[in-house]
Structure formats: C-alpha cells, structure tokens
Image (cartoon, rainbow, N blue to C red):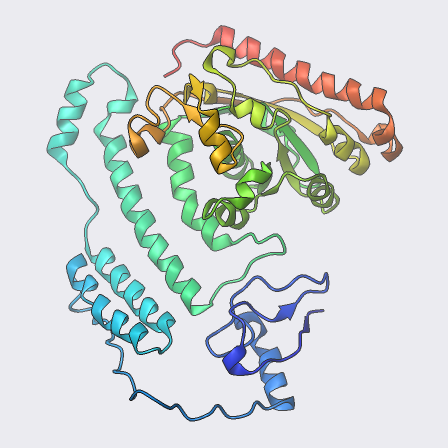
Length: 427
C-alpha cells in the first residue's frame, strides 16, 4: 500500500512525487505541474485536496502579465529552422517568470514534428565510394551498414524527443529500482545495431540461462567501457526465449557521473554493492557480475584475455547466501575494441576515476577516438555451478568460498583460451 506524505502548499510542491512506497522510499516519478503527486498518484492528491483545501494563492504583484506562449503549428514546421523559431517565445516566457516547463515542452514538440518530417540522412554517392574503396574488406564496408546507421541515428533522435515530451508531461513510471521501460525501448535499436551489425555477435550456451528464477552470471571484464555488460544483456534479451532483463552490477564510480548514472538506472542496472546483489537474487532476478572489477577493463593490451585477480570473492558468498546458481560467461572480442596502451594517472585522480585510458585513437582524436572498433565477438554461456547444495551457512566457510571462486575462474579462463586458439581474424 502506498501512503502519501504530508500535503504541501501548491506553490511549495516538490518537483518529485510526494508519495512514498511501503518500503519507505520516495516515488521516483516527477509531480505534475501545480500538483504534489505524479500521474500515477493523482487520486491521492485529489483526496488530500478535498480533506485539506489549500489557501488561495496571493494575487500577483509587480510586473504585468506575461505574453502568451506561442504554440507550434505542425503545418508550418517542415524544417528544423522553422522549429527553432520557437526559441524566442520560450526565452520570453522564462524571463517573464511563468512556468518554463510549458515553454520547453512546446519546443520539444515543435522539434519532434520537424524531425518527423525530415527524411533520414543518406548519401548514395559516398556509400558507393566507400564500398568500392573497401572492396574485399568484409561486411564493414557494405553501403547497407552505413545507410542503416544513418537511419538509426535519425530514429534515435526522434525517439529521444518523444521521450522528452513524455517526461515533461509527467506521463511515465518506474519500478522500485528505477527501471524505465520507455528508456529501454529508446535504447534497444542502438543496442540491436551494435549486437547484430557492428560487432556481429554470436552466442553459445544460452540454454544454460534459466527462463525464470534467480541466477548469477559471472563474466570476464574488458574493453575500457562496459560494453561487454551491455552486449550480455542484449544477448539474453534478444535471443533467449524468455527475453529476461539482465541486471548488471556496475562500478560504484559510475554512480557519480552525470547522465551515465541515471541512464544505467533507467536501463535496470544497479551499483555493485553486496546488499544489492543479495536483494536482487532474493527477488529471483537475473544478475551479472564482473569479478575482475576495474582491473578487468583497465588491463593493458598485452594482458588481454588473461583474467585478473577476483578479489575477495564476495560474489560467491552472495550466491551461497541465496542458493543462486553461478553461470560462468566468457566474452571474446571486447578486449580489442579499445586497445589500451597507457593510463594517465594524474588525470584519473583529478576526476576520481579508477584510470584514464590512452588508446591509439583516444584522446588524440577526441570524441571520434571513443568510437569502439568493430571487432567480431562471441559470448559463451557455460554450464551452471550449483550452490544450493552447500547451504547458506557455507557463505562463512572460506574454504568453500575459495574453492568455488577458483572453479569459476578456471572455467572462464579455459573457455577463453580455447576460443582464442580457434579464432581467426579479430574482424
């Protein structure tokens, strides 16, 4: 049962919904304009307004009434510059100290209408030249690939504006972990493109992932940025019959990074804390943990596909406490997307990061150097290792914990060695 908090005056209503869940956490949805509650809890708001009618707001004093905000005309918004003409009235609206949300909402709507009318970018001449220049270089120089990428970026921008319009209207909700299905729907085409076209990922052993119930995926970590976690999630979501959401436990440092932290939360990922792992497993979720941690993604290129130390094996204790099976996962191909040749430690300390990567392309080429190389991947889901037979008390037995930890490590390393020995070109 959701219980409302104390009602507040409309002029002092918080930007976040004032309802609290039965677990004591505050609702994550934003409140509607001039309301204390979101769209999901407006019935609470109406009951409180009836029981405790607010005092009428005082009459405005000072400057005259602001000019009315111009509404976008869909018939006129056939180009992007036409949509940008809405900026002056939006600026005037903010300067006159009326609600800026409506002005921003009108601007987003105008841009969305304009972008829907614009065709996706295509350049057949450039695509043909690219195909001829890279003749014989494989499917990475196919015109269809780059045409598909242009259409994807066009779609992503349109979908982003659609999402912003819903956010500004307060028309959305999240689960207790902050997972937002609209954000997953927004990002899914990009992840599909990376999964099937950019990295051309193949998988094996997906049948070892249970269709329901708790389980822990343990994978090798690499690639500077956590693209391997994203692609493991994409593999289970796209190719597993149950289409389960994998909740990866990310490095706590990302919790303090603007944009990245809320994006990870909206995609259903959580910070890598033992309490989070236990709680998710007790709720029969499918989680993914990278025991190497920051040491894995910060390995130099010369140490690729050699597992780093697994630390204190806290993940094994979490699995034993909950009786969750451990499914080893070996990712081949992610080590080469950002060949790490150095680390700028002073810069890393300045921003509080575990390391600051130096690759053959980054930071020398700026944002272009951050584009991952289109290597070919394979993800192996290996047979599960049962833990329920040991009982929850085994989590306090260091011998059992170390035995299972070493078993997982050797299983993943053996699979990596076999796959690398049989692999041809990385592209």
